[in-house]
Image 1 (cartoon, helix red, strand yellow):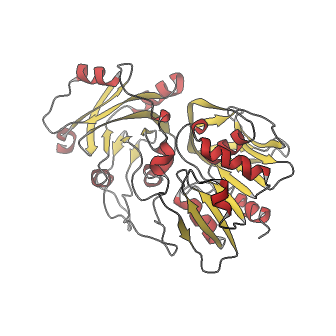
Image 2: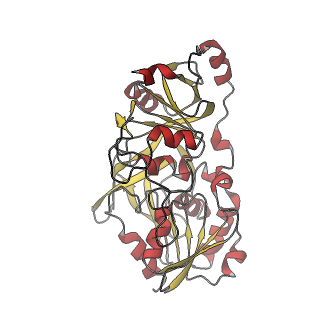
Image 3: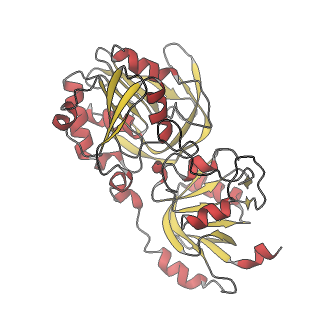
Length: 377
């Protein structure tokens, strides 16, 4: 196949180990944190556009990716992109075993290769993603470089090895500031019955959609909004979104969350939002060895023993704790890590996973209704 001969590509770890393959998407060099997700062949469009992947090179463990193509940038009745979690690709690079060149779906508007090319994001295929995943599971996530060359170029591996030594951890950056809204935005359902201020640390579109479907007006504000700025909107509640990076560096969001707790404001958090609320309550966070990224992660309520299948995407976690009136109400069944906290008396709770994920399990969509109940709506 001529496609396989077009552009050589290399994925190289900071320690010098490398994998050669065939490039697709943009012809360029990127660096970042190399992580893997066990999401299946469905969900690559959502994965690519998830703001929580900012600064990361994502490895898909599913062997064939792109088989149903990429839909158009169509919006729903709320003005939100129907098939994507944001308005652009957020991953730095994309690693697959095989990229489908001839997708088949009635809503497909382009191929995966064309999508990455349009968005100026490099990808690599015909690479052993199983071997890469084993390394990441056994040793932890890696920093590295993905480079796609021009046709006919020969990769200079020694030169790449030297460059890879200088790759910086993107988690040292304030990643939320790179994906958060820069201005206040208002999203209005047809018949609003309440108002939520959403602190945007990198929110996914389907979170917005789930709130709007419940007739909740959303005031989306930048990641660094203060408690006083938020309360000027007179919200029924506050939502702290998902997002990328190390929660400990988001000091303004933590300070705001402390005041939300102190004043008993109905509050819900998802993913990074769970970590922010926990840190505000006196907890501590840590980095997982290789993260939780996939669509079939099981969590359990330790009191009721009820289990939920969840979709997850996070590299940091909260140490299990009971602080300032909070308790854990969900834990990860695989590694016993925290998956949710709830205040014993105040209307505040958060979960580490994504109840809104699409495609994904629907087990925990009830949490949005729980939030509405907390707000008295």
